[in-house]
Each structure stands twice: as C-alpha cells, then as structure tokens.
Figure 1 (cartoon, rainbow, N blue to C red):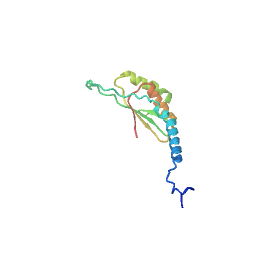
Figure 2: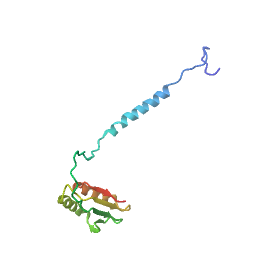
Figure 3: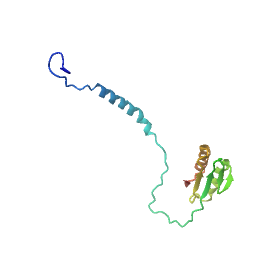
Figure 4: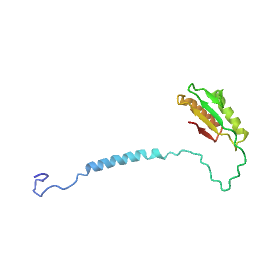
Length: 136
C-alpha cells in the first residue's frame, strides 16, 4: 500500500509544512531588509494653496531658450555662452524681478553629455530659478 505506515493504520494524510515555513521565513527576511530602504524622504518644494490669489496683471517676461547641441555647446537665446557664465546670467534674470521670473526652456540634444546638463541644472538651482521646462 502506498503511503502506509508500518503499523497498518492506513495512509498518511499529514501535510509537510517545512518547505512552506522555509519560504515564508525567506520572504520575511527579504521584507525586513528592504523596508528601511523605502523610507528615505525626498524633499520636494510643492506649491502652497493660496485662498485669495492676487490678480495677474503683470506680463510674464519672455522665456529664456537654452539649447545644448551635440558638441556640448550651450546657447542662450541662440547666442553661444560658456557653461561657467550660466549661473551669473541666471542670477541676473532672477534679480530683475524675483516674483516674476522668466521660464527657462532647456532643449538638449540626445547626443550631448549628461555632465553638461547636470551643470546647467545645478546653475539654475543655485540661481534659484523656479520655472524650468524641457523642450522635446
């Protein structure tokens, strides 16, 4: 007889739970290890709700078109500019009217280096530019 014990009591009907317990313990360890990784906060400056917004009578300034070509040359409104001068120019634009900043439109060639884009974004952040957009 299959699954019979030596004493002749009939077939053994017990389920072996050892593999199930092993799998559950492994999953528990995985969740314990990965749970703290997901709890690091990321600071994001979200806009705050304004109950009575002021009327918009001020005309926004024209946007700044910043282009990065395949040779990593940066153009400020179609005129070449060095990456080291970007932060100074951005600060000048912000200081004209900090509450009515121009929008920075960044158009990067897919073949340009990431380092140039990172420097442009760092310069914009250091100049405290708030309106940054990407052109496709």
